[in-house]
Image (cartoon, rainbow, N blue to C red; front, side, top):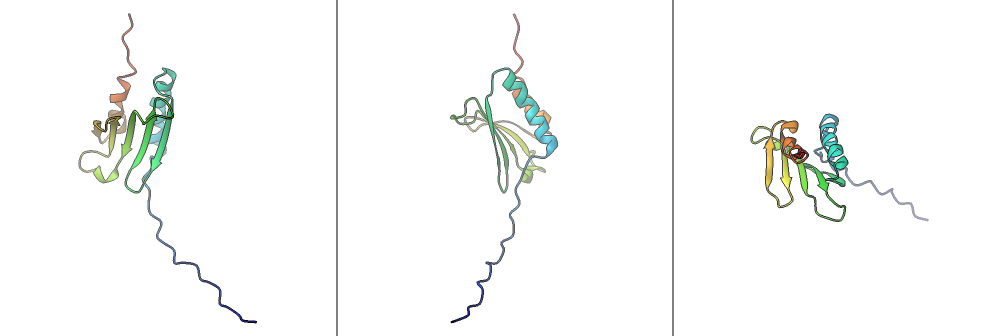
Amino acid sequence: MTVQDPTPFPPSRPISEQIAFDRKELGVILGLYGRMVSSGEWRDYGMSFLKDVAIFSIFRRTAEHPIYRIEKRPKLRDKQGMYAVIGMDGRILKRGHDLKTVLRVLERKLIRSVE
């Protein structure tokens, strides 16, 4: 009978930090999302939290590409602003330092003329 030493665990890798929306930011985004769902404009959403960006994707239907993406990139905080709304075609619709101000570009779509 031979005795073997236990196999050591592999060295632990440092946990990579993820960028995420905080509770206040999600409250603002989900407030707008709820109003747009109740008006019938939007139907689904998805969230991605990556190493350098947090993305809130908005869908008209589940199987489609997102019609809008709300991105948070903290590295751009001192330059152009860390929040951006990006359209389906990849164009940046609005960028800035304040999330509520950036989301106004989407709220305009909620306002309709009444005849």
